[in-house]
Length: 390
Image (cartoon, rainbow, N blue to C red; front, side):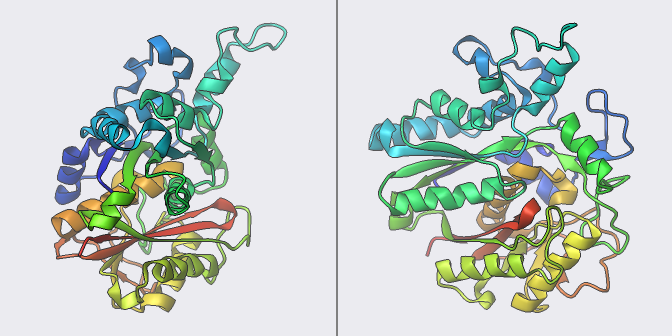
């Protein structure tokens, strides 16, 4: 991971993100998005309404791609990719992007402006503004890359699974490097959809809390530049292993015993050549739903017991859905780089029925290896192991 960039409700760029994590400052606020009238909190990125994509990228203009554009422009990320392009050639760098709803908000707006016959506005651009592949195509063109590119939409595991796809393509010598990440943006579909499932919290979400009552939806974009040479040199933060599973237990509920989560974590450890005791911290999926947290806790307790500290950062960023995998991978990288475990400020009373070692207060702690979990609807599970190069 030679360069990474992140934009979320915590702020734009790594410095803003790190400052918010250290201060345990949540980016959640009462919902004021668009026309939504729900009693819930959101993790919104301000200013996107005024940052339209123009010129050659006008056909890609939507909230999701605006969010992606901002992340590409932060932390010297685009410049780092340009330098990699000069080293390897544009055709040897792939783009692997994840999202869940992509630019669906653009379609929501378009549907309000149908004509008397029901036709959508003539200026509506489905391919660039809504299509799931839009983000991969936009990022590929914005960074002037010609290597393989595809988008992954596997609910909340989307951008975590993008790491797995990139690692395979590098291992197969299809690429020398990969731009990995993606974006998910606020829209009416997810806010009202999760509310209809009775999964949104009335206030800020409270992961692993005894009184947890659902998720707070957020938006974010993040990108990582993975390079084969980085792993060979042993520099910086390294992707050590990825594990995927599909328990296919239920469309929206995890397996109650956390079997799919357990399989993904075990596969990630195996790929990294590590044992559970080698992991210093686990960034949980931890969405703050009754069933979801309980199932993940069961899997964590089975694998780690009560020894390994773990927490969820969704009380800080909100649940960024398809972007959660890359958001939390980058947070894990910051924890490794700066030696700390982030706080869980909205968790007031950890649920005594849960067995894992849930940490609510941030702590300075040297870390060498961390695991980050992302589990999606339909039983799509992915765990990443990141570490400091030895």
